[in-house]
Image (cartoon, rainbow, N blue to C red; front, side, top):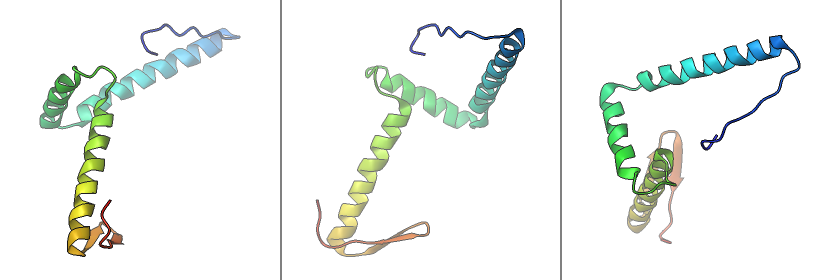
Length: 100
């Protein structure tokens, strides 16, 4: 995509019609997905996107993944320093005293 037009060729009119309906359905589903979030989460997402405008290559998904990775790293370091056991849902992780 990236702001460029996509040109597709088809062998028959029925292929064109099928593709047009597929694109229509995709747009409908994308529109519904936006309203699946509660209003407070949509407002928060809009604010997060506004913060990311300074970083044109960054995405909201990248920012969240970065946060989770850093947060998990912090939790692991805290657990390692105490020698505790931490339970993430059904996955139990035991940590040694070695901290990266």
